[in-house]
Image: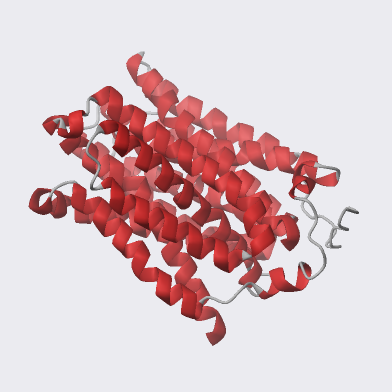
Length: 400
């Protein structure tokens, strides 16, 4: 068990860097908007945010075949190096175009981190503990987001918005020598890819085509919920008549629920199975999202409903990743996780856009919650088509 400590810690840090990215642009946007730094307007800030997410999605999809070919260790180290250097470069951008381009390029490296770390952890976990290993690792995502938000409260005023990108990039660079020294290659990957590796297109061929489609829809819907709620929950609750302060506090409660859900979901998934757990989690997410559409008079009930929503919504998405790791063999697991994460990032763009459209139309409350509940139910339907298990026999490589 001692042998697992360094890989677990380093993969957790890699995911925490993803959590940094979730928050950092939102943290600096108010300053960039008010000051007009680099010539930014609200419209160009929206463009920069969207382009950055596009880069993350492309990076997630592109890294899959590379990590299956060259290994988890080199892929993870390279992606963190790319993200870190380019994130520091953002601090020195002179125009909005440079800022946006660097944000896109940094996103390529950052997007590659998550599926590689997921593939590594799903293979490095003890037998029967893949679900809890992945969900525990993903707590780093939310811890990284919270730390970044807290740093932004005093760092931006004291040192300027540029300092946030320097901090994030330097944090990534500092992990590189430790990763190089302490992160071994996945033994499961080495054993199963000693033969000529199959083509990455196996993910969308034969028995895996239906599986991939179901998981992609679920991943899309899962990140639509995560990013949609993180972006618009305070605003929607405000339209419901709750105070702005209450709405912001509820966002914190939502993310506390996320961490609780991650710690609980993996244990249940390992004991009860991936498929029944992820189906239950998305189903309960839909129930509690509908419950939020009801104006609750007692404050304690409101906080409890939001906490439960966070428990099920956020960990449901991570259970999809654990399910991917369970169903695909090591020789194409990186490709499968990259595709699921990349398509999920499209949902991360659609979620805030959907919420924004409903807010603009003046119907975010209660229809925003209904729309998000439908997304959760669509994930349930998609996952219902996916088998609980697939034959563990290794894929036979195609002849040259």
